[in-house]
Length: 133
Image (cartoon, rainbow, N blue to C red; front, side):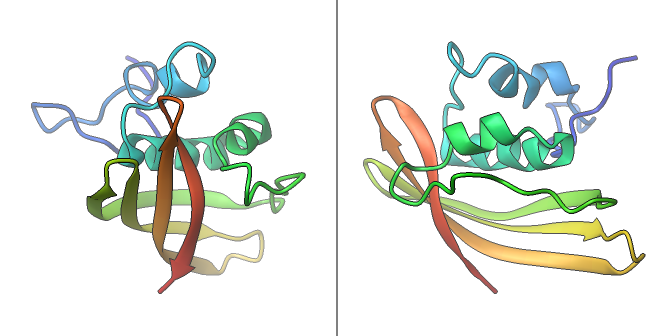
């Protein structure tokens, strides 16, 4: 059986999609297969955090806000993602509200709630920034 995608997206039958059918196609083929919408990009970025894929995270961060590096905390276990809202804010803009849960190396659970902003340029979506809730 195929490995379920970390982002937790469900298919038409309500079953978790396999990584290769979901975020894997964007992470593994970024040059040729960009995420088609802001929600898909946000989900793939979550999967990139789970997989500690710094290259993908930097490549999908808008150049105006892109950090020089993405650091990963040792021992973090990602526990799940819930997308609360996805909406277009214009022809080339969108917002995605989500909650991501993780457990740190110290065993403490953390819940990250963010309203993220995305922009589409040159046919690709990019993460710009977000507000923590």
